[in-house]
Amino acid sequence: MKAAAYLGVRKIKVVNVKKPEVRDNGVLIKMWTCGICGSDMHVYNSGLLMEDSTKIIDDYRIIGHEFTGEIVEVGKNVKGFKLGEHVVSVHNKGGMAEYIEVHGDRLRNLFQIPEGVKYETAATLEPFCNPMHSFHLREPRDNETVAIFGAGIIGLGYLQIVKANTKARTVIVDVSKLRLETAKMCGADITINAREEDPVKKIKEITGDHYVRYQKKSAGGCEVSIDCAGIPSTFLQCLEVLSPENGTAIIAAIHEDEVNIDPNMVVFKYMTIYGSMGYYEHETREALDLIASGKVNRDMLITHKLPLEKASKAFAIQGNPNEAVKVVLINE
Ligand SMILES: [Zn+2]
Image (cartoon, rainbow, N blue to C red; front, side, top):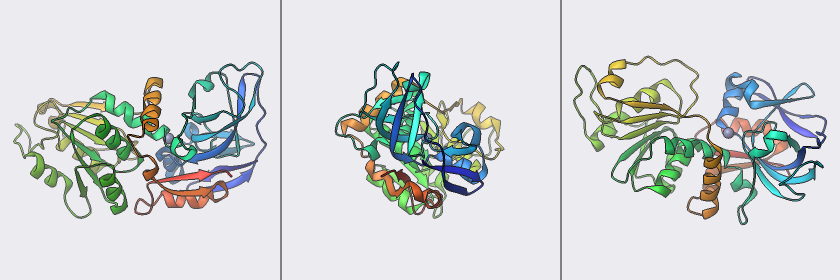
């Protein structure tokens, strides 16, 4: 079968590997769609997370974990899944392949696609679970302001969840016009292009510019801020825009570099900082229910659909934030 393998930095190639055999406690899924995740991009760009994000088949590292498909074989000891069922997977690896076998414990990461939800829409489930978890760490209240750094699939998903559940004011920052336009369509109250203006200055203009003792820098007025971009500047901005007291920063992106911070900013602003990575099973169900409810438009975030054979090109497109929000591979 065909599968997309990671061969080294910025090298993805479609190779032929052995089609997996179904174990007695497993199911075989014919892949229909597989999204390119931010973590796949870390593998692609630097090799970071390679072990965690790929599955070895015939000595190749097969990439991808955000897949949907149809169950085409069911092992004789499997309960709860049947032939022909449409499923979406989270956590399971080796998704960019014509077929994927999932067995044993891993079956709990397979969810039935609700009726009326398309395969490609369902393929956006996994990157919707992460922001669902971030949302529950500190739910914004209706009268609060939330700053979101990064309008990729995670930042936009977080925005959609905040908008679907609260009346909080949302400010979102990015450098891509396309992504900021998409944020507007998702209901963002204020969008800031960090290439054109200083996002911290702008946020302080909107929310107030407050003195904080023992610090050179002033504070903004956001109750919650989230870093979905994962670069040193957004990490620091995330802390600075928080209000003088009791703000919450959520760090929801993987960073490739270290950050220099003034700890007094954390201390004298009585700040809470959460690390957000991964999610619980009930949050996956909640994310799937929200997609099925039609209250959020996930299709809007899919900018490109390419056949599995074009995986290499798909990664190149996903790597350009001015061109793409979410790229999904299709196995026809
Ligand atoms: Zn993912």
